[in-house]
Image 1 (cartoon, one colour):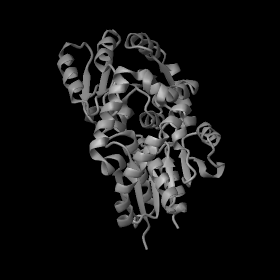
Image 2 (image 1 turned 135 degrees about the horizontal axis):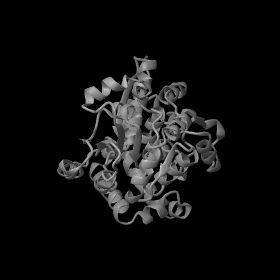
Image 3 (image 1 turned 180 degrees about the vertical axis):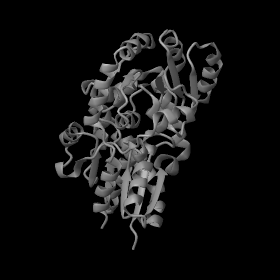
Image 4 (image 1 turned 60 degrees about the vertical axis):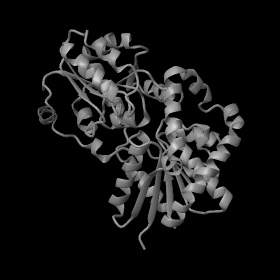
Length: 372
């Protein structure tokens, strides 16, 4: 009988969602007979609260980022909020229980710690034995991931694995796989043909500027500052779901000296990364993993406190990225890198040691081993 796999992520269009889709595709490639369902666990269980939490989260990041940095992976905060988390987990698990009973999965996998915690608590309270996998999509593993009911952790690096083990996870449960990205990122299309297809010039240095799925960060200011560079450049900007930002950038575009191409929630990011010479981005785990697979050097700006700040530290230590503290520091950094193709080549070469183009396939293999 075909196996049944249930995937949980958090927030449609997010990196967690992209990771779930990559794993889903890899699973079906290995076994087309599988029955796979993927759900935004929070929105499915509690759609109204999910919207409130997302709005609150984005508001905290915008107005009081220091608060989020204090809350993130803070053992005292974790202990003091354990009662609230237990209550939320119970309510959400109760609403997900009908889905579990109806779908009857052979394996459950979660690409975000919240849904993984809900399922782990559910197993502990009910005695359910369905194998549970946690797929970590940042280069750090905060303590909210650790739970005795999780059967497998798929982690990006050896350092991530060691950090998980330090929180009490059994070493045999933590497997270094990399962060799962769509296999299309490993492809190497003809760059000149892609430029023609995308309406780009073949002979200019191209900067890809991204603000994550929510279009976060001062991209309007970043674009204005970068446009002051006199060296010939071409800009490609991805605004995600932030239509207000996209409209502002479209208004600005006629006044820019450099050719500028503006996208909303782009479906062709692999193509955009293939033609880019340099990526300016906030350091989400998925975006940076995709860039590593593409061997695309990065300039990091405006990391979210917590996970993205730690992602930044990882990327800087690996010397595949440099960081601009503000939009005003970007132009000289871009000038220095563009003027030194040898340095960009070294950064590209260093991406090789970190890139994991087969991560999704490795995760799929590990998950299928869990299936009874």
